[in-house]
Amino acid sequence: MKKILLSFFIGIMLIACSQKTVSVREVWTKEQANEWYQQWGWLRGCDFIPSTAINQLEMWQADTFDPVTIDRELGWAEDIGMNCMRVYLHHLVWETDKEGFKKRINEYLTIADKHHISTIFVFLDDCWNPTYQAGKQPEPQPGVHNSGWARDPGDLYYKGDTAVILPVLENYVKDILTTFKDDKRIVLWDLYNEPGGSGGYRYGERSLPLLQKIFTWGRTVNPSQPLSAGVWDLSLIHISEPTRRTPISYAVFCLKKKKN
Image 1 (cartoon, rainbow, N blue to C red):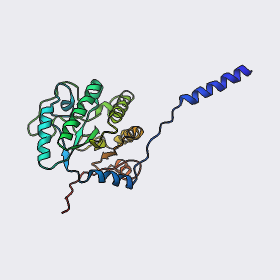
Image 2 (cartoon, rainbow, N blue to C red):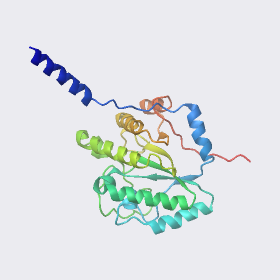
Image 3 (cartoon, rainbow, N blue to C red):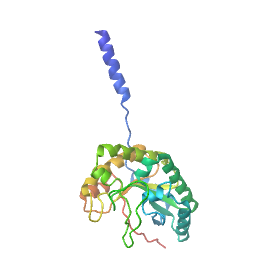
Image 4 (cartoon, rainbow, N blue to C red):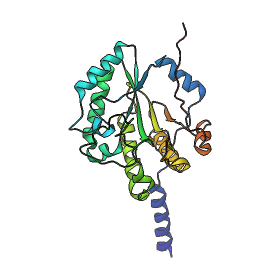
């Protein structure tokens, strides 16, 4: 009987030791947000992709990554007074070439920093083409806005097997955040662009669970930079309302006139 009890207690102790408590950082207070903003001042910029790339995949894949064009065009941005660029990533590049992708991210940051330009990186996106593939990207369609832009994860998640893609997305987000969590060249992480989508083919409120998950992943890594999401459609109540409250950060895209 004593041997049985001893084995039982040892088993309980092993189970307890194997359970890791994962801490998730709290949402920043207004004071923390204001302190962060003071170190950056007036951010002036735009979304950036080099003119030689039709989408995120063509920008970041090894065969088409174009530091020469990036350097030249960020130089133009610097010349007109811009100091911040919002740049989209894509999980498929990470999935096919993890270390190479992170090396190219660092190379981009080095080029941007040379031009005194900070960076906002975007992970997920519900806009434009819902399917995509690695390798050669489609040719531009004249007169069609964002003809080759790729959602992330798009239909791979919303019409595919979430049990397969979710671990990939989680590992991708956590790996990039962990690698660059203390990088002073990065202003903030925009975790999800326009969740729910815009235009005719939209996911709507179905994007909420993934939006919640990526914030949990981000807050678990706890980078030094703030976490945010660019909400477009405020009529999606379950998405827009939480992002205005404490559980999730909230970002509004607007033009800001500098005071004299």
